[in-house]
Image (cartoon, rainbow, N blue to C red; front, side, top):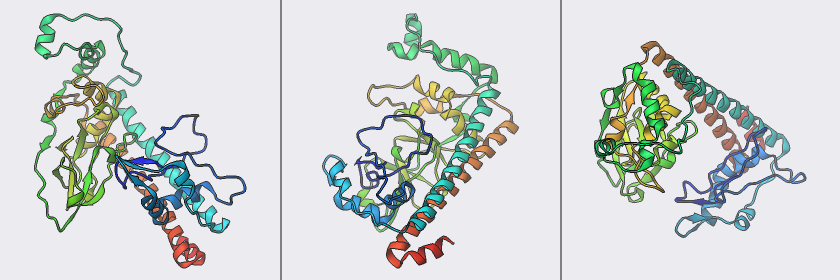
Length: 358
């Protein structure tokens, strides 16, 4: 299932595979859904990895049309050439995809356990924000908040603050230091740039694209060195919150649409889980301004109330998040090996590919 529309060449052509047993769902028109024909001799896992390989991507880059965004239509996508490697090699690739899926499932399970531990600690494991249809507020409350929009005064916000107030909450700024150091650029160097779309909202994984200085957008401003916690200020309730990978140590830069926080482990992982949980997202929703692209300010993030929980619990949450991250890295390494095996098979022959697979 590849993207058929993307703001950059790094976005268009991104591909994913739908796992077996996935519930019925719709996809956006910006994606194309591919199914192997019964007589095509193309196994889905192999097709997925081929499209991720450089031989798949070069066809994306050659065909994509740069208009307002890069585009591929279904006819253009159907013109892609797929080499028919042996079923033995395709089955080996399929097995790698299955192994990666297991690691990915383990990653999600570890993170889910961390989130459930946090919510259980706060007594909010089954809490869901309820949307009230009618409620009243007085003028003094509106004057203090400097807001008159009804959404700001939804009772769910008071409810969640009341729940966490018994845990002696502190402002986030007491636990983390905001980084505002501007990046200094050298036109001879490539930079690992993090924008909002590089944060996986389903698991908090932070990626990046490697770009030359001329290809960096104007809002590529904040220097990062790895291990910082970043919080999106644009549509913050989507959960674009994660930890900068250590790969960005020497040449990392991120969008000014993030609040970048320096905070040590295990508090870092605790805050990541807390802010991405239903509690954190509810708190991030209240100060939002705007409609199509609701935003918050740096001060809104720094002022967020954070409950105080036992150090031992924070350490357990951090360990679960670390195990989740480790399993996710293993899944990526397995898929990288599968992708490389396909490239070797095309370049050097299938015997070499099977030897590489081992």
